[in-house]
View 1 (cartoon, rainbow over the protein chains, first blue to last red):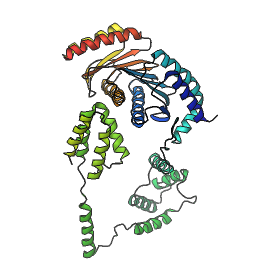
View 2 (cartoon, rainbow over the protein chains, first blue to last red; view 1 turned 135 degrees about the vertical axis):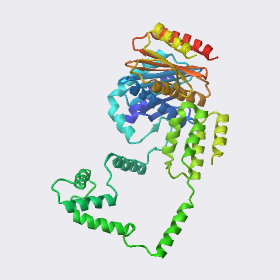
View 3 (cartoon, chains in turn yellow, cyan; view 1 turned 60 degrees about the horizontal axis):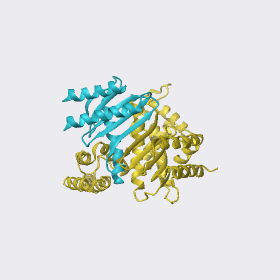
View 4 (cartoon, each protein chain N blue to C red; view 1 turned 45 degrees about the horizontal axis):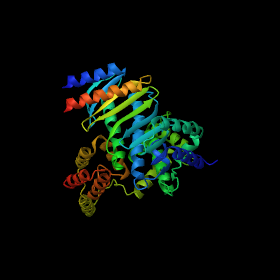
Length: 320
Length: 119
């Protein structure tokens, strides 16, 4: 049977027994399948519950081997129960109908025992980036382009980067002049890159590479050794001035926005703030006003109390 | 004042058979603590405040008011975080063989005392 169908069946089974408002299977802090009547607030609830799961896992850093089994909380008219099937897989249930805790726990344990048999398949499903909603159609969250981009970024981060051309050339020159029998940094890198199949099968010799580098330098329009003419200097200066006309904001504005957010949101502000910076791909060294405005706008959406949201926006707008 | 908080925490640890307790401000800073030596007070404080705050985000989203308590059960025991109005969070670490009923009762008692001290 298809893993999606298996998950749907189990979700439906829990749903019929507990009548929750929201029920979801998560892989790490991301939902894989969700069934809910709270369609308008679904995304925000999913995100927040994902953060709770993430925080729950952090307990292992405070108490090594804590081995979280479940998280439970209740308020007036609401219960949140997160049952950890495996360290990576959890079932999250949100009930507004006062379910007995013992029943919640028991039903989740029954489903968990079944789902543990499909842990690998759930992992594959989650890593494919597919997410589906029972009784509703949702767009696939990760497009093919995003997935391949993420893979490239991952590969780059996990492998050592090829150093800048100037460093390579220096290394090569050193090797040529010393003629050492031992493997140079360059040769070690070549071997490593070969393993990663980035380079072609035939590794170029050092001399070939030097020549290639020189060609690459010219095609990349690097600064040449010959002294530029006065005209060229003036043109360069003009270009620099044009670049300088782009006003980047000081990085301290981010700290101030964070502080404003923390005032309105409390300790969860740090998590939300860092997530938004990452999502909006904000470069702390090149802060543009438009980006900051977008950041403020996105952060304000996470402040649920209207007065606090207005105050946050007002305080932040004073900064830019 | 700090001594009074410590006294309350020591009482709850002693009477409930728990491993430790901590009183945390809502911005995640420890006010007082009685914790085992190998447990990082600052991390427990920050985590406690954050996790309860996250739970409250859900309840506020659904217009269900405040969360009273949140607990995490693991193979090594319990971590129980109790909100004290919107002033502080009481965190208690208890072993897995702790009597949950007694523990929750002692926590409630301690929370009430702390609320009085905080005014």
